[in-house]
Image 1 (tube, rainbow, N blue to C red):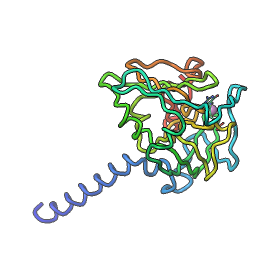
Image 2 (cartoon, helix red, strand yellow; image 1 turned 90 degrees about the vertical axis):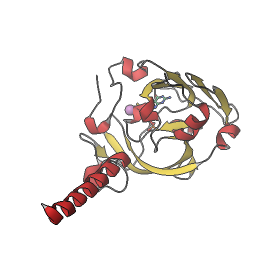
Image 3 (cartoon, protein in one colour; image 1 turned 90 degrees about the horizontal axis):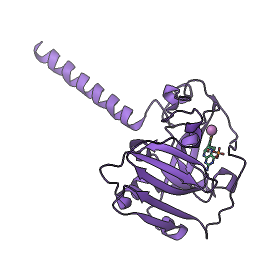
Amino acid sequence: MGEDGGVLGRVMAKLVDTKQKWAREGRLLTGEQAPPAQRLPPGQREVRNWPVLDLGIQPEVGRANWKLEVEGLVENPMVLDFDAFMALPQVEAKSDIHCVTQWSRFDNTWNGVATRELLARAKPLPGARFVIQTSYDGYTTNLPLADFAGEDVLLAHRWEGQDITREHGGPVRLVLPRLYFWKSAKWLTKLSFVAEDSPGFWEVRGYHMRGDPWKEERYG
Ligand SMILES: Nc1nc2c(c(=O)[nH]1)N[C@H]1C(S)=C(S)[C@@H](COP(=O)(O)O)O[C@H]1N2
Ligand SMILES: [Mo]
């Protein structure tokens, strides 16, 4: 082996390292770094428009009335109004949308608050393992805390430089690019941190508890 083995070993270690880093960043899976064919999860097709999906109700929630409650297994439960929400550190992030009804929309630019910022303030207790989102239209959807805490997950109030419209869930919706879009609640008003997973509106009706588009976790 000698020197060659050593060099090869170092090269291999570097390769593995890079791949692990890519995996962590979701590279080659999502986002603008990947070529289009690799950005489209199985069974999806790209659309250029932005379809609207809801339960037939689009609640009118003005910024003046909007509130976000953070409750359950957290050290610091809180209720944020829109001003308090906007006072949190803001970020811009570009990501892809994958809807379980088989459309994907690339390169959506969002502005909002990273869920990590909220988590840093609310401080989930050790027992918290899932997050239940509740919306003004009565919609609910559940998430593993680990998915909610992803670095690309936002509580978003702008899309492509414009305030998110009522039909798309304004004033504030979740954006969680790595799961199907039904996991991103529109008109968000409550985040409940819980120990046990509990199915939301669509999950009760047969949708998957996690909903990873890359694994086609659509149903069941
Ligand atoms: N509050 C609420 N959030 C929701 C829904 C809903 O009906 N109510 N539908 C979900 C589904 S199934 C999808 S695909 C996306 C649609 O978001 P869009 O209408 O902005 O495309 O929102 C998700 N979040
Ligand atoms: Mo959906």
